[in-house]
Image (cartoon, rainbow, N blue to C red):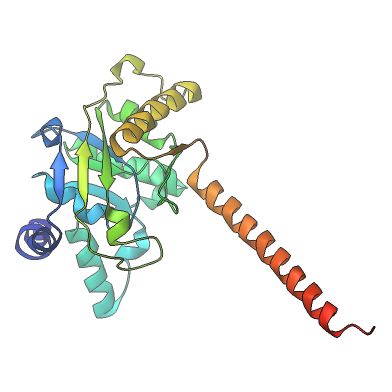
Length: 250
């Protein structure tokens, strides 16, 4: 109930009024029944804008810590995340990934819409990275279709590392539902899971127009940090050599 208050009476109309988000292909989202929305991930604001353009509630899983704070601050944080369509990851499954799937399976069994970011983390450079196979396993175990979608322009509104960038009109482009029922019962076959995930990522790439990198986003971020560190070392060595040239005795 609070979600709809937040969406339609408070945050939602304000975001719509200011940013006027556009949408394409919303008729691809069924009016009822369980479905997975698989999205690219450009900004922390993706989960705010994407649900605004369709009438159904979209639920994401979030860290349990967001719902466990104490005092007024903890209550406000829990109320905000719950109201914004997020639920805590089930911690009884031994790992965050297994807990997320368990939580999402429960939601899908109740006929809800689950949002998921197959890349696993936000893109740090605007490129689309290799998807993790959890989305494929979820689709097969739940027996529901996957709708690929692309958020566009949210990285301008809220770039990585910033709360706000500059004004832009973000949009969401929904693709046709993908049916993977032909792979029923094959959720433990890693090759099938990879094939399904790659098909989903291809559709997201086609919808978003992003450059695709066949590398996990986390690995790319790590590689880029290492490159930056090595470049900094080269600069430091060059600066030291320049200083030595200035002060060394003749």
